[in-house]
Length: 194
Image (tube, rainbow, N blue to C red; front, side, top):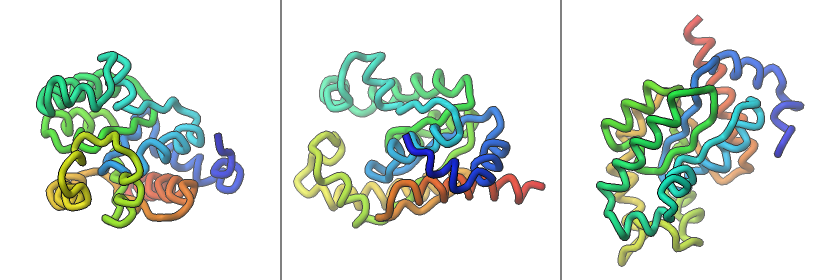
């Protein structure tokens, strides 16, 4: 994957690994924040498995997220998402990338917070829109004005994402830089506790 984080900052990776311990690292945030891309880099750097909860939901249901939304609606999808995440978070350590709405559901949020260290990848509207408007696979954005829908989701969800243990700004830079910022935030969180 990318050994850059390990070779350039072995002390940072080691401090983050120690701070994480046996806990899962759970990435939360809106669609387009970079949870999957950053998650893969973090898992590789920390030498732990990476799980994308959306892919796991598709695997167990044998349906795409879009098809699940169309066939069963958002409420049923969120119930399935909660069950899958509860199972995934029983063992660790691993890096888990969650769907944008997972942390919004109160019951699922409790499972996530009990199951690991949560990091909110926070991004502004321009960064998110640039990343999500290229694909037509986002069920919640199949609206007349998808950018406005995305902004509405931000306004509703950002106060809830703010409950995450740590917040790292996801911006329009190389994903390695964001991954390094996450590692630094993890390491710093342990430093604050000592």
